[in-house]
Length: 159
Image 1: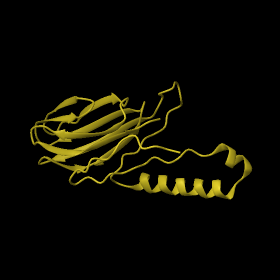
Image 2 (image 1 turned 90 degrees about the horizontal axis):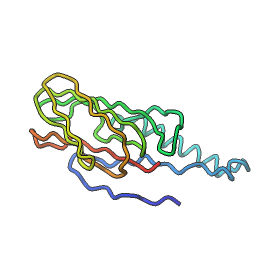
Image 3 (image 1 turned 180 degrees about the horizontal axis):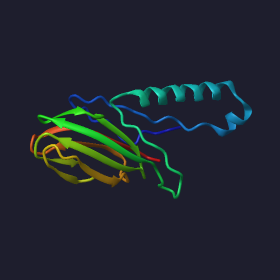
């Protein structure tokens, strides 16, 4: 049984996206259960649908090197006139993932990732990168301070 670890806070313009699928049951897999096969097919279909969604960032797996070893994600965002014009509105990650948000803005501003309290000064038309290890789980919004506009959210799920 999987329990929810946070509640989605309704945000205008954002649609909550859940990408957590239950882990496969090794006992059912060993028996060749039809139910396990169906569950695996459903989980694969869900993962495929999420990966193909343009509003969700994807990640490349890394080999495990510790309890919080994760993936490396580089997400590209483009902002024009204070609005997100390219890139995902919802970035999903697992605890332990290394996340790099590369953002290009047409105006000077400051990107702020709430919950992590990370800030990045943006220069016009110059790509800037905010890199960090996703250690806190939950949903964290990211915004432009000068334009006072929320661009999207980072959702970090437990490993």
